[in-house]
Image 1 (tube, rainbow, N blue to C red):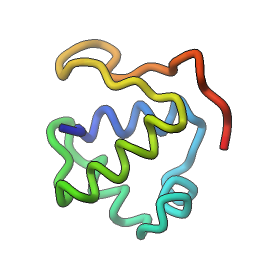
Image 2 (tube, helix red, strand yellow):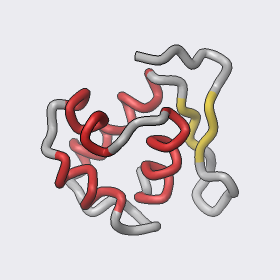
Image 3 (cartoon, one colour):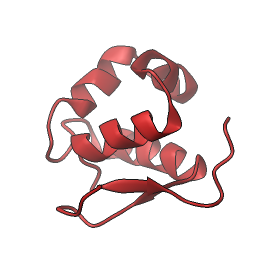
Length: 81
C-alpha cells in the first residue's frame, strides 16, 4: 500500500517537483497531486499506485512500514534519473 505521505516524502527526497514526477511516469500532474492529497492510502487505482511505487523504488526509495517516521528513505543505490 502506497500512502500519500510516502509519495510526498519520496518525491522530496528525489528533488522532483510534481510535474517532473508525472512526466517521468507519463501520467497527468493532477494524478500525482491527488495521490499526495492524503496521509493515508493514495486515492488512485491499485495499478497506478503500483506504477508510482515501482518507479520510486527504481530511483532508490525504500518504503518503510506505515506509521514509521520517516515513511521512506533513500537507499545506497540512488542514482538520479
